[in-house]
Length: 179
Length: 70
Image (cartoon, rainbow over all chains, first blue to last red):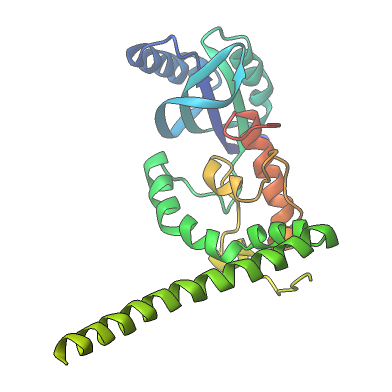
């Protein structure tokens, strides 16, 4: 069992103060030295560019995102994890074991997938309607809604009436002129 | 006046086995305004996928693709 190499996925957040050339240099160093020392092999690499973070980490609001997939022996992961943790270029990292169903896609492919699939989902989701119903469940909130509806309806009728009146008036006026 | 609708699991419909934890916009659809994970009664996700979804959201929070609180 120990001789088998396992595939892992590593997400690296590098400091935004680094330039792109620096990040590439760091990645090559990572590939050769850090992974090379434990005889790991990179199978997939995806550089996302600088992205804004959902929340500030160490007072930084953005970071270089890099996703790397590599294979290595399972018992070397702990030392690798520690080594990355102590690295001064790395803001944060995450090592995940690759499961069978996990797709290997780039960030561009992911965006394309989202554009195809996400708008459909919003329609089918429906929790927005539920939320609205939750708020209107209260009897106090329900009563004014009814009143509003009643108020709105007559205004619509009035508008229609006005239009009809105008048409009728025009007809009458035309008739008068004809006479 | 609750309306009960039978919902189907989004991931079962799309035949997604493992949920992509790097897909922030997708995960945001299963979180509420305060970045809490929505209950599966709310979204219609099946139990198997809810467990994987929770794992994915927690991972994506760690790499700052989703927030913990708002």
